[in-house]
Length: 474
Image 1 (cartoon, one colour):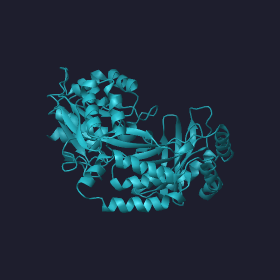
Image 2 (cartoon, rainbow, N blue to C red; image 1 turned 135 degrees about the vertical axis):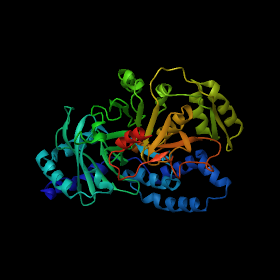
Image 3 (tube, rainbow, N blue to C red; image 1 turned 30 degrees about the vertical axis):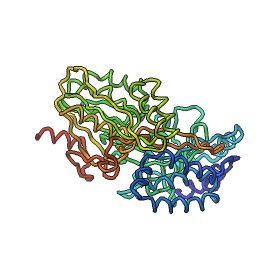
Image 4 (tube, one colour; image 1 turned 45 degrees about the horizontal axis):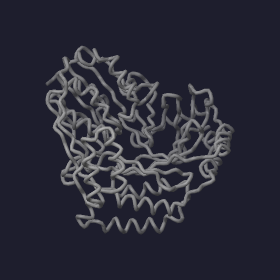
């Protein structure tokens, strides 16, 4: 039965990916990307200052030679492969391909012509779940939700294929192909089909005990399974990115925050609806496993446990035209912080200069019974989630971190997006404009992540339960 399902789709996958009338010359896009990296990326400027660019130069030549042979549909993957040299998740490309109405119609027709029966999908899924490996990417096999649909991921000959089981969207039918992935060094990559039936290249990984699937562009899927699994029970099935707050017992409350990319208004509403529960707990357990970052919306609740002034900070910036435009935009709302950076950039093009000087931050008094704050992390806790860890510990003596080291995406921060001249492929380049502080990379965290105060072994299945026992015993 397994082969019957998958062979029906193999023959038309390539036509879905390659049928676009492309207007993208990857060699030209690569040249522009290279220029943007060298003009804007401060970590490369630091490497140059240290005389450590031999490997980089060799890589640029190798990729330049290969670029003319890259198909437009593979260009984003090719460019990302080049950027992976820097091992910085804040240096990336992503695509938002533009298709004609006819192309979209063709994609939709081909997907709907190759529907797979839910019964066959379920049969294959049951078979594979019995055969699944205990480690690695096979944790991706199973049922997931993206908030709009229930999705099954099954495996065939190195591919992971995602099919719609049921959906709240009237235009979506059970049995539609939603995505196809292959394993990669960073997790997996492949093609994702939007609900408008447009294919695009994505990368992704699974975190939080294999219950949270995160894809390029802030797409979050949550595992569906027995609610006896605490990680699964704490997933908001209506909107996977939104937090969930739950009282565990008289002393402990769990605050699961899968993403800081959540809609701000909805995020605040969850906190408002549960404010009494949050402020009246003794031990607040904040679970940010799999939270790859977003915005600093965490300042909306840090005052609930703040005990001291959060000291200001200042990093470094590489003065460039693109970075100037980024800070000019920010200066419209906070000129006292960002306009001085703009002026320094104008006078020091091509040089590394002082970045924004963020002032000390005092938190208003807040009545709460919180005595301890446990922040639970894993290697999927990145970027703004790591800033949250550092800011929480900087603002409160009540905070202790648990779990495993964070992802290490914090040394270079404050992302600026630039659209590359990539025709209908519509490729964007993102780069960090600043260092987190002035002693990067000498005292950076990208190579190690933030180590927890209390490590929890990987084989401990209930890490929240571990924290509860820790506080009972200490």
